[in-house]
Length: 306
Ligand code: UTP
Figure 1 (cartoon, rainbow, N blue to C red):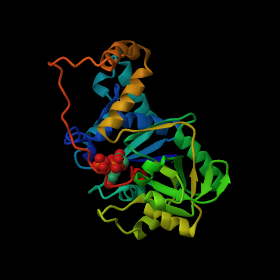
Figure 2: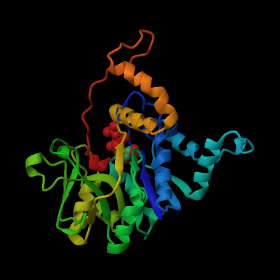
Figure 3: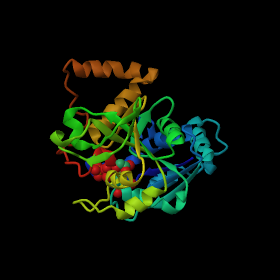
Figure 4: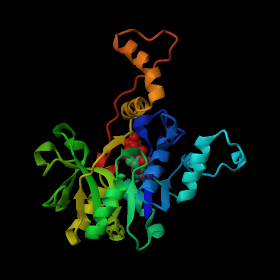
């Protein structure tokens, strides 16, 4: 299975941390986010992974280099594990010259994926699913031989942040998409099924991307390309078993770090008293650094595009 991982976005919601380092390289407890995404792809059956990078994203390539200079050290199991991951799938890189939206990032994979179907996972989202999310989607693809998008039910107040799909349920949890609407106002939303950012796509998507007009921000949105495609051929949306962790801004990143740390027995024991003290209302000691206050940045594209 070929998998494309777009990771070329600017990460503006996470500035200044992302000024000179990729958002996808920020640590989630002890591993960069991109490593979880690659692990998920490999666990789903990927043997060929294309990471779409861009300006200032070279650390992504360095991370998956084999650690030849440390090859004879047997006290670095984490590094051996990472090397093993890099060996299990061929990992390639392509550059998106300008971050012009998710569909534009996927278009960079056109020659790599050729005439084959392929999976897509976002570089800033970790899915904890069993079976792995892309495996679940691929199983649907093998039944329908058509594109499949992961969707989940979103609360009313979040509808505006998502691409929303609507269409008849063809089997429990699988919908044939008749409408895909980008960030609809709640009153116009045809359903509450939001696109979460994991896909199995077929080569026809490239022609649809070519025909898709950029939005008001100059970005080519994948939801719009899929809406064009759905007019000509079946496109399916499927719910999934598991949890999605978007880490696109500092709150989401912190929350996910806490959840993952809590799942580690060692870290949980050490964190518990810290959290208890904070919850009791104790003030941080003056010597502890305080985060910079930052304004909430409006999101220029929907969660469906993230
Ligand atoms: P996001 O929208 O979460 O990333 O895209 P972003 O654009 O970096 O975020 P902000 O809004 O500026 O903070 C989801 C994934 O798609 C990639 C991103 O790198 C991220 O991993 N992406 C997004 C691209 O590869 N190219 C793009 O043009 C846009």
